Length: 341
Image 1 (cartoon, rainbow, N blue to C red):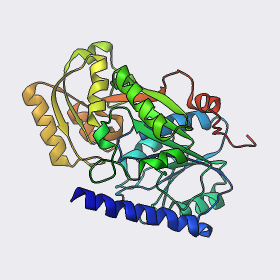
Image 2: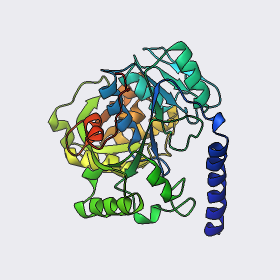
Image 3: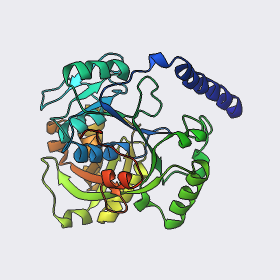
């Protein structure tokens, strides 16, 4: 049955891709440079922190704008311009909220129709660079740079087309990107990194592969204050609503946190009052401290965060070489900055 479903899925994705190749006039070419950051697989590759690093590097030299789908938000099928310190409406995605908290000055245009968002963005904002979030499968925008993330923590069994594996498109599409970022290299042994580099190089021999690691910035309280190292030695209840919770646990372990309880929700889940109260009660009963990801923290009100005495893990992602993404990609012949910058 899975093989039949795979064939149907392959047929649909092939038809969509070929449709926009044939009717190329439907693909919009913005004046601004378009950098796509995306996945071949279903979520959980560490895309959000990579996007943040790119924004940090590029905002020093270019006027930026982010195009994001707004997945499962009220604006996914409409349009919303997110910018500034708010207040902002309810229902924004965790990525959008976190992006706005980190970069309130950078406009984020939400909506599934990124073609329309790019046209509106150019008319209103005149950016020099569009960052296209989760843009690998988006066909209606012409892209200057295509960056694809591959999770080093994934298993070989996952490298199959849906529904047997986690791939949204066939592996030959790896050959059509400008660079592959092999993420979470800090969480796997060297032999697994070597395996994935060889596997990727065999399927995309001319595409540069950049090993990427995630570093913990530390634990912070709900007011954004860095906690002392002694806090890392406590017993914790860790909860999350992300694609790869194992990476979250591995990062906590590097800090020395003792994980006594783990509670996982579906990716992008929005916590309700009852769920947060239940987590708080469980932590009190077990005499544990509560910790979550920064991405999940953005969906929790200050009131609840204070009541729960919540700890937050902050991370950042960078090339293993310790160079910036801009420098590392430039060394591979991939330029991120606008040609006239």
